[in-house]
View 1 (cartoon, one colour):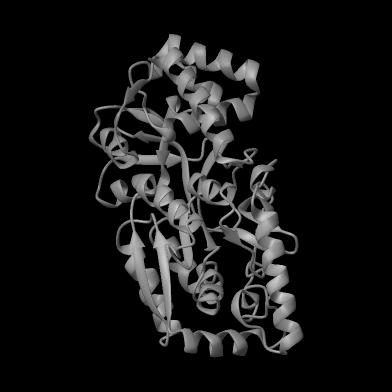
View 2 (spheres, helix red, strand yellow):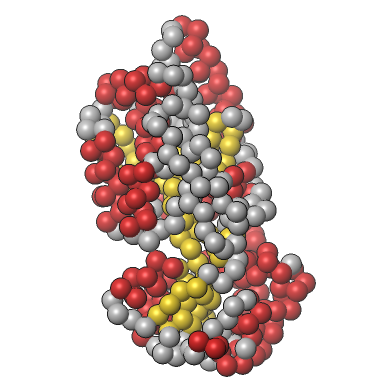
Length: 376
């Protein structure tokens, strides 16, 4: 472990991280990146006791802190690309620049439908798209599958294995935030006695006409979580019964807008809504409540370093910062979950089991087809 700062306390989850195979697998392209970096590291070590270039990313000597900070002062900058939206981006950058005032951060923010293809195109053309990135799990899968990631020394200590992707003893991706997705309801519309305690309870006829879900990856991921929890045969039978008994409505809206439909009472509940949206509505006085109906979907945000990194020392400091106390405090204030903190419910990461972006896309399409067949 890189000796970057005093080791913060990590809580080992007891129910988080079940069977999360996919995020542990290093996808295509990582081997070549790792070997390239290993070669760079070796040449740096042979010519000097102080690493240079991309060898800085995997340096974990006892003087790593001073080495990285000295190199970052010379670099003086960092190019950060992200699909995060809202005040959290500015807050993260301000906190990082406060901790490292000699590093100026330039931010490239865009939706992933634009950001990911543009980054892949630029990086493959040998043009530096950015030094570091923060995107969702599916977006990270695409970058990893394109072979655009560089390994870096472990800044995560005992973070649960389902939230990281390794390359040998180093890391390619690390989770910095989690958005929890499960069941939310309007307390004026759904009596306490009818609130489901398990997935099977969603077929309670009392919920007929009350349920709503999204015609998007959010709703489709929920279908995947059912198959994960119940198995393919039982899961598909359950989805068919749910459609026949309670016919959930499907809306082409964002997660926040769907939460708003429940908060306003247009629908009584949704089984595929984000905890943070419900906490925000509750803070505004809406009669809503979110419960962790298992398995709770963990939509993760992940950080990594791009192949054509121009400022490797600053990049190494940033990926460490993202899982450190300052950044994690900001995320938690905005109702994101932290990968460093255990939760009292079972979780599932939608991209687990997928080793390529194409594989996850194929699974998503099959989940979409099931939603249309049973609820459409």
